[in-house]
Image (cartoon, rainbow, N blue to C red; front, side, top):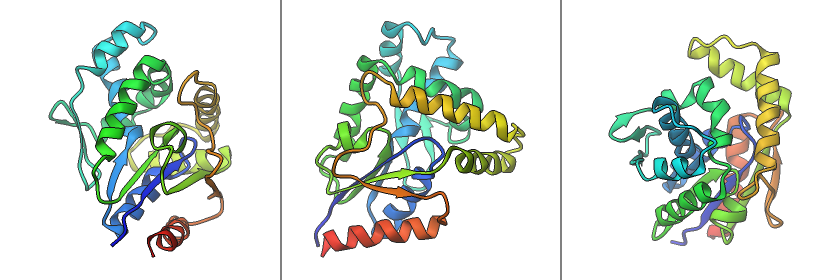
Length: 221
């Protein structure tokens, strides 16, 4: 059987992780959530009151992280389950800033490439997978949605967690994060030239999953 590497990029709250996880499950591939890895750094910085503007301290913090990603979506940081903690508003608002310095991203990129190496089928999602981490991925998807749709999705997700941030505030935060992500000096959010753009604004999760699976199955044949 032929195995391929799938890279799914796109802005925050575009549904990448949900879709990538399900695509990996159905193909019986390994799923690697790079966003969760950067969120672990943001959480560590918050909990240890590290100055995120000090690049030296950020790089040192990366070396203190033992991140484990389980197949069922659980995220462990230094042997602690932080699956919910890394989805807090504080972490969300900080993650773009701690992940911007080139020295930080280069460390994570090497780790992500090592994770993908020698795997029989990989689905990896993030901001720069198709352009930096896995530039030779067999299938590249650039998953987008309007900021208003993404804000609504985040709002509904937050309600299930008991978080009641308003739609206006969420959309403002999403737009600010988009700006930071697209203007990073290294590893910026950018569509790879050979990526397939997929606007999910008016598609269900199942529809998006099926579209990506159809592309994947054409390559696996």
